[in-house]
Length: 122
Image (tube, rainbow, N blue to C red; front, side, top):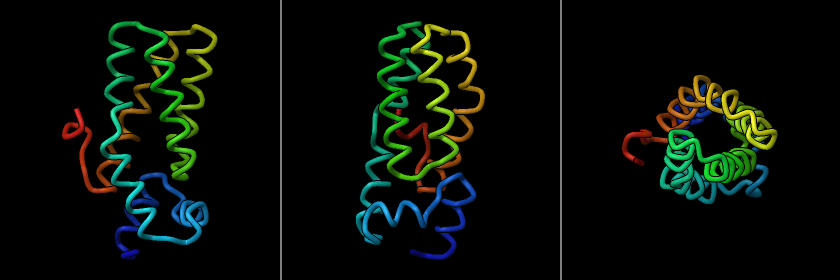
């Protein structure tokens, strides 16, 4: 992996070494998974669910994103989505919605570090 790319990903909250361990050291596989992350539709689904105050839709999207971020060692986002999932699970919609103040910039940072933007995915 290009050292500058690694620095961008790490600065955006990704543990690149841990992610590479998860894919048995395959940089090609990691790159493929990062590309898939950019194409994933769960973030727009989360925004839609929160906007509609649809707890089930928001929970499903947030829970899926939590798993994806965990598998890709995106530690900051994993922690934020974990907190949001628990808020939605306990039906604290206001807390879950309020967490978007932290989730959105973190998501935008990792998306930019990977090489895309959130706006492109909507």
